[in-house]
Amino acid sequence: MANLIGCLAMSHAPQLMLNPDHWGLLNTREKERLPEKPELERETAEVKWAKWNGCMEAIAKLRQKLEAFDPDVLIVVGDDQHENLIDDNMPPFSIYMGEEVEASSSLRYLNQPKSENRTRYRVDAKLAEALTLGLMDEGFDPAYSKRTRYEGGLGHAFARVLKFLMPEPTRRIVPVMVNTYYPPAPLARRCVKFGAALASLVRRFPSDDRVVVIGSGGLSHTKIDEELDQRFIQALQQNNLAYMSTMPASVLIEGTSEIRNWIVTAGAANRSGTLLDYFPLYRTRTGVGCAMGFAYWDVN
Image (cartoon, rainbow, N blue to C red; front, side):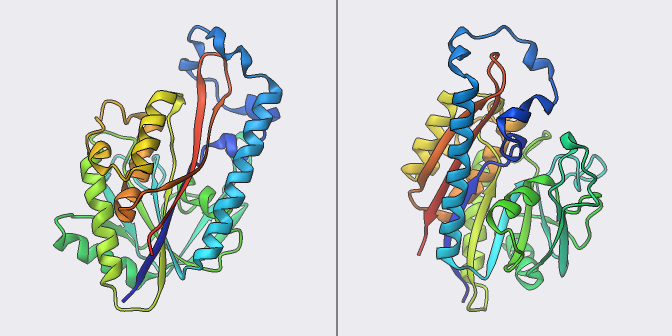
């Protein structure tokens, strides 16, 4: 049977793709017009660069951890922001089961077309199909797709994390899309159970493959909530799935909703996780930015 050997999770916000000197290219949003917070005067250019460099170091450590796991297959759990799941059909969970798929890491902030910076990935279609069918037996009814309709292929939640952690497409993938952004989104307790079901099905899949689950997104943004992040991180470190299950939908909104992808991953691991690092990257003095987190779980 296949072996779930570990799990990883990391943020994917564009502030990771752009160094602090270029954060001004990011869209100015209504929330950025909130009153300034005097305590954020400490977020100087020097501090921003130190935090960003810390993020790059954490990503390098995650990449090393992935290499140490040496998996055959990556199950990537990410959200979709009106890329492949749009208003005509937006299921809570969807699995891609085509034979291959492309993803573009182009940034619109740099006016890079999605026809560029594309990578083609092999998909483990047999595992994807087994997960889809098995989830039905586990009480879930996931959608599936064998094609993408987004001009960039897979959405940014997949493209960016794969680019960071697997620069060369040497391993097979299974993309699992979670509708975190657009209500009604799956409840946190549902995400815990979904992750547990994924892990159980991997372990029952007839192969000798080594499998890693990767959660993409989070932590709190666009308005950073460090207290929320620290409570979640503590739950991650203590394998407190009960706490994660009770996180209210009223908190898991907008960018912060991507914590659901971490919850799915934590549910799959069902072990105490290790936080590599956490950096709240403020890009304005109103508290707007993205809190970046990087973690892993040793499962076997």
